[in-house]
Image (tube, helix red, strand yellow):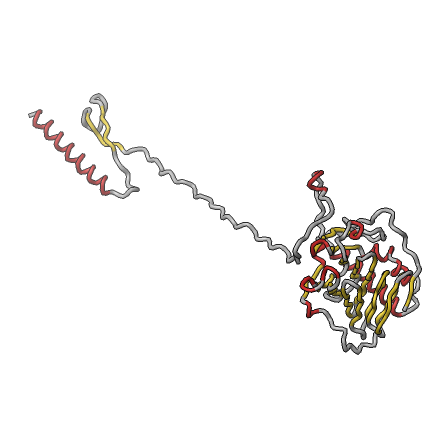
Length: 336
């Protein structure tokens, strides 16, 4: 009888286990699962002796990974460079001290940035010009050989002239053996011609007020060039290859960033208008004779342009060099 009872108990237990396993397989994840443990016979288990019973497991919360932080990557910024007029060959005749002695170079504008490339037909025409030249002022240094074929034109053989144009006059022309220079209204320029080298300095002419047409010597035929000159820059052109003394004359004017162009027959400099007003004979002479209306207006415009260039300069006053033993400005001048 006891054997039959034990066998019946075992079948009941097996049936309960089967039902429990079936229920656990179909129950949701969040439902509590039971496990079977063996209980020794000497331990009480609610009326029965030792055997097997179900005990709920210890709840272990699921492991949740923290959210991943994704940092978006931005593309590198695009830095477009400023448009620069690049002729056939651009070199710097001065040694690069920064590369040789590990000295950081100043971030100065290049001389070529002072040029404005133009077409030949953009140069003003002098023919049939009816301007009376009432506000075309011409001043010349001593020992300067020049003539004025018309009220608006100057033929410069040797020496230096300052040409100023104010409205209602429109344009003045200066002719040399290497080409012509046109100065339009509200522009002041100094043109020097010496030893086969022509130097054009734009003091305060904005935009394309000072234009240079190189058409003589090495610039004849297909090599003719027309460029505009920005204020504070000078163009040096020679009938021969230029030398260092042509780029850096001992005239007391501070210059920087000389760039040789057009196969070595021309160069561009940036100069300091402040030092020009202190050292140039032509400007000093005007400054000593400010009784005329034209002279006062010229000096006022030069001073304003010097202030504007200093304000707009990325490196104001830096890098300008005066050649040693430069001559002091004199007062001698010629007027015509």
